[in-house]
Length: 632
Image 1 (cartoon, rainbow, N blue to C red):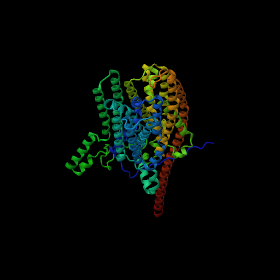
Image 2: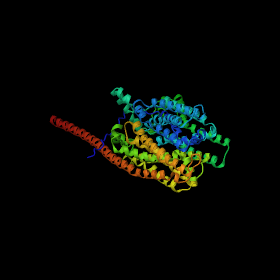
Image 3: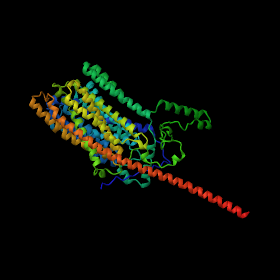
Image 4: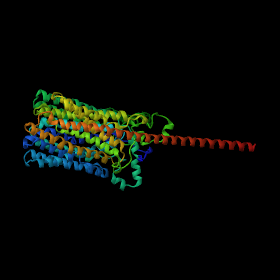
C-alpha cells in the first residue's frame, strides 16, 4: 500500500515582529529584473549564427553542435543549486560573472580572429559562456521569490518576462550598434553581465526566515527560531500593488513596442538612424525599471506634511494626525507599519474571536510538501514534472534555436537578416506575454478563499495547449503564415518557463534551488536528444539529399519527421501533468481537512475555557450566597 505524504501545518506566531521595508524588497526585485536580462542572452544565438557561419564557414550540423553544447552546459546547474541552498546567492552570482565574462571574451576574440576559430573551440567557448547564464536566474529569481511568498505568480512572471524580452532587447541593440562588429557585441554582453552580477552581489540577500544550510547548522536554536518567526510578516504583509502595476506596465509597453519596431525595420527597410533611435528608446524604457522601488510622490508629500505638522502643532495634534488605517510605506525606518498592506487573518475582518483563532501558513499560501529534495527524488510526482518539461522544452528549443533554418526550409529560400530579427523579436515578446498569462492564472487561482483555490499543478496545461497547435501549424501552414506558429511557440515557452518556477516553488517547501534546478536536468537531456540527433542529424542528411545551399535544406520534408516525433512527445505530457495535478489535489484536500480539524480544536478549547470560567464564577457566587445565609 502506497504511503501517504505526512501533513505538517506551520502555526504562525505574530507577536513582536518588525514590519517589512517595502522599498528595499522592491529594490531587490529591480536588481533581479536586470539580472534576468543577462540570463536571456542564450536566446540571442539566432542573431549571431549566420555571422559565425559566414566568418568560419560552418555547416548547419556544426552550428547545431555549437548551440547544443551551449544549451547543455547552460542547464547543467543542479550542482550550483546545492551551493545556493547551503551558502545563499552570493557565491552563485560570483560564478555567474566569472563564467559569462570569460565565455563572452573568448567568443569576442574568436569572432575578431585573434583566436583561430573551429568547431571544437566554439563549442567550448559557447559552453563556458552559456554556463553562467542560468546562474543569474538562480541567484536572482529564486532569491526574490522568497521575499514575496504570497505574490509568487506576479513576482516570478515579472522576472521571467525579462528572460523572454531580453533577447528582443539585445537584438534591437545589436542591430543598431553592432550589426557589422559581432566581436564588439560580445564585449557589450560581457560588460552588461559584469554589472548585473555586481548588483546582485551588492544588494541581493535572502529574507531572515529563509535559512541556508550553513546557517541552519551553525546558528543557535534560539536565533533560528527568532528568524523563522519572521515568515509570518512576509505572509501577512501584502506588497503594494501599485509597484507591480508599474512593473507590468513596462513589460506591456515592451511587448507592444519591440515587435512593432522590428516589423518596421524588417518590412520598411529602414536605415541605421531609425535602428539607433529604436534602440535608444528600448534602453530608456528598460531603465525605467529603477523607479519600481522609488517611494511614490504622494508618500513623500504625506511624510513631508506630517513632519511640518510635527514642528508647528502640539503633541496632541501630532497624535491626532496619525491615521491608523493609512498605509505609509516605510522609507529608511523599519518602525513604521504599513497597516493598509497587512492582510486580514481570515475572511472577515474585525472579529475578536477571529484574532484568537489559530493561523497557519496554509491561510496565505498553498499546501506544500515538506520533504527534502533527496526524498522527493523517490516520488513519481517529481519525475512526471520532469517528463512534462522534457517534452515541452525539447519542442520549444528545437524551434527557437533553429528558427531561421526551419523558416527557410518551409519557405524554400534562405532567411533574410530582417526576418531573423523579426523571429527573435516575436519569440521575446511572445515569451513575455506567455509569462503574463501564467501570472494571471496564478493570481486568479491562488488569491481566493482557502477552500476555493485551484491547485497550481493545473498550470502545465497552458503551455501544452499552446504547443500542440504550434506543431500542427508547422506541419501544415505555408511560410507566409508561419509567424503565427512562432508566436504560439513563444507563448508556450514563456508559460512553460513560468510554470516551472511557480509549480516547484509553490508545492515544495524545502530546498527551493534544488527542486527548481532539477527541472533543468530534463531541459538539458531534451536538448541533447532533440537538437543534435532528432533535428540536427535529420536536417543535415536531408540537406545532402536535396542539394541544399550553404547549409540550408529546402522543403517541408526537411523538418517533417522531427516535428511529428515532437508532436507525439508533447501529447504524452497531458497524462504526466494530469497525474501530478490529481495527486496534489488529493494532498491539498487532506491538508485542508487537517486545517479544519486544527481550527475546530482551537474553537472547542476556547469554548471549554469559557465554560470553565463561567463554572468558577457560578461556584464563587454560590459560596458567597451560602456564607451570607449562614451568617444570617
